[in-house]
Amino acid sequence: MEEKIWFSKQIFLKMSEAYGLDPRDPHMEELYAYLQNVLPGLKVLEKLDVADVEPRVPLHPVQEESL
Image 1 (cartoon, rainbow, N blue to C red):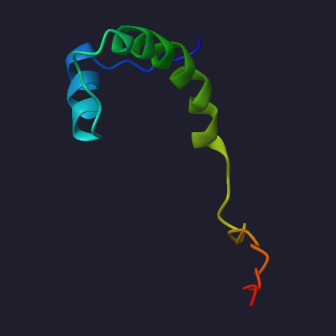
Image 2: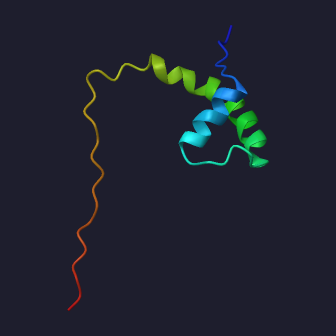
């Protein structure tokens, strides 16, 4: 049985406000519903064993300044 990740709408709105979002925005209802559907799918990441994996450093090409 898949475990459901759940947090209250009140907690969601407090976290959103802490990250600079307006909790009164009507879009927050849609965002909350979206997260309730997406978060359970991310639960599988907890089972990944990455103990022996070195972190990847993204390579950014050096840009030369034009004279």
